[in-house]
Each structure stands twice: as structure tokens, then as C-alpha cells.
Length: 313
Image 1 (cartoon, one colour):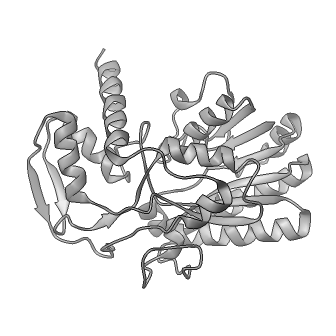
Image 2 (cartoon, rainbow, N blue to C red):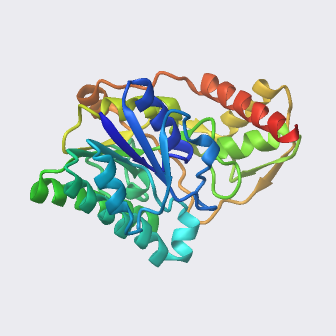
């Protein structure tokens, strides 16, 4: 199968590209390498083709016509909640107009399906837990809004043009290649500070919880979506809550360093708890998380150690 991975130089997209190659497919990565987006040329797998381009550019048409993809894995996005809130026009240009450029050219090139990286941010602050596919989508950020709007466009293109889709509403994805700078996941931020022997800031009381899912498990789900999940949206997590304090203790064990903790007030808008009910993705996609949090964090720590050593040399 011939697959285009937009955003394939980024954290999640590059692991997805790895997984597609491992399954024997031909992969073309398109990435703008935007400095705030996390895309790095070094993340692109050696066996993948690479084109440096923005999904909003008109040359996407030529790229799609030349490559003739069977499927598009759409991970390119303006993913920062902070940047989206500050510049909602930019957020919409990338996440909506950029998506439409991809969908239009997917249809023209004869692609059969799009796998879309959606987000748990489409749910906003749910009244009940766990979150599942029936939980009302009430996004509270431009980023969450554009991801929800994108799902509606996917449904339109399926009905109007026969372009199939599977949308994956990711929880808190972590793992190797995540950028610890800027707006990153707490695990990547903490690991960088642990390895630099720096203090850790923990907001609130540290007992707030999230559903953390390992990036290689997410990549495996994308492979399953090549053949399954037609016209469906799925929440993607582990079904387990983990507190910030638990992450801190696990990293103390993994790094043999007890980082000093600075306590801070609750951040405005911070949600107390989040966890996903993954029954549907298990039954429909035959997928479940294979990596427990401690194992995933240990692999991530080793990755950051190697990256740090390379940077130092």
C-alpha cells in the first residue's frame, strides 16, 4: 500500500511512519518542519521518502498526483492549545483549511481512506467519566474546536466523495521523540528535568490524573486502522488513571534521582481527572495498549539519555 503521512517528522507521526514501513508499505512523509510543531528531519525513517512542504500549499496537489497514495495518515496539525488560543486564525488555517487541501487532493488522486489524528480535546471538560465515544463533544479551545470540525468534514467527504476515514481521538500520548520544550506532555518535560538534575514543578496537589498511552501502541493502532474502523471515531487511551505524583515517583525510580519539587497553584482551566473507556476500540479494532506506564517511561528515559549524549558529543 502507498501511504502519505502528513506530519510524519513529528513525535507521533514519525512512529506511525515507522510502523507502516514495518508492515511492508511504501511511505511518503510530508512535513513543514515548523519550529513550534515538533517536526524534526532526523525523525523521518530512513526508508521513507520525504518532502518538506506545508499542507496548506498548492504544491500538495502535485505531490499527491505524483505519489498516487492509497491512504493518507493525517497527523500534520497546529497542536498547541496555547498558540491556538492566542492565534485562532492560524489554528483554523492549518487544522481546517490544511485538512481540506489534503482531503480535496486525496479525492483527486484516487485515495480510498484517511486516518485522522483527532484529540480528546474535542470533549472539553466532560461532566462524567470515563470518556467514551458517546460523551458530548464540547471543546473549550480553538484546537479542540478545529479537531471536532475536522471530524465533520471527514463525514462529509465520505458521504459526498466515498473517501473513507477512521478518526482516532488520542489521549495523553508519550514516548521517545516527544519534544520536552514548549507545550509538551508532562512526562517528556519531567524526564528532561530529571536528566539535567533540575527541580520539578508540580501544580495543584499532584493528584490530578490523566490517561497516558505509549506512542508505539498508538502507532500499532494506526496500522490496524489501515483495514478496520471504516467511518468511525474512537477514543484512544489505556483506561487507567495516573496522577502527576505517580509519574514523579516512577521517574525517581527510573533515573535514581529524587528531583526537588516546587509546588504551584492549580492552573486556570486544569481538569481534575481524565480517563477513557476503550471498549469500542478494543472490540472494533482488535487493539489494546501493550505497554504499561513504567515500561514506557523507562524506554522514554533511555531515548532521552541517548539524545542527550549525542548532543553532548
